Image 1 (cartoon, helix red, strand yellow):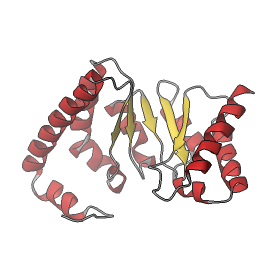
Image 2: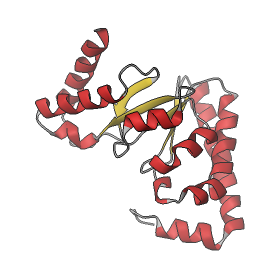
Image 3: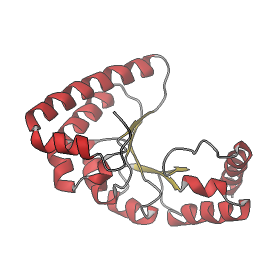
Image 4: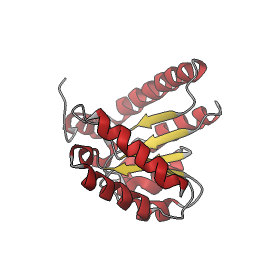
Amino acid sequence: GKPSRDFKTVRAFMYSEPEAWDRLMAYLSKMTFEYLAMQIAAGADVIQVFDSWVGGLHPAVYKASLFPHMSELFRKLDGLHVPTIHFGTGTASLLPTMKAAGGSVIGIDWMTELGAARKMLGPQVAVQGNLDPTVLLAPFDVVTREVDRVLNEVQGAPGHIFNLGHGILPNTPEDTVARVVQYIQEKSKR
């Protein structure tokens, strides 16, 4: 295979072979649970499930084709008594369904307004995110401005974990990351 930005091949398979899709997803969910259970047994304190491609699906398609498998995975993970984070990109329209599928925390990508996501999800789950990872490549005054914007979007609302809205880029300066952590820690003390 090769990387894809729109996952045409997997989406075509999902639509054209729904029974095979369900069998594959059931198998992958089972294997994912077993792997994550081993991670927890080895000492993991928190589990994050990355569902990075689902933002390319219509909410009805997500609900029909992925929700049953994701909700089963999170139901089983709940039995292991560790916090779980449910993350996807491009998922603003999927957030209520992702919440219903499970996760004590819902990860919010950088393309979604964090305050709106917080309101949509309600206080029952925490939110994590959602600084654009490319911001960390900018001058530090731009970085702090964007960090402040993220923090201000959820100011006063409980249950926010500051994080990037996706993975850290390979060329991100380590010093910038350290300075952001220190900046957030200082702001949190106030």
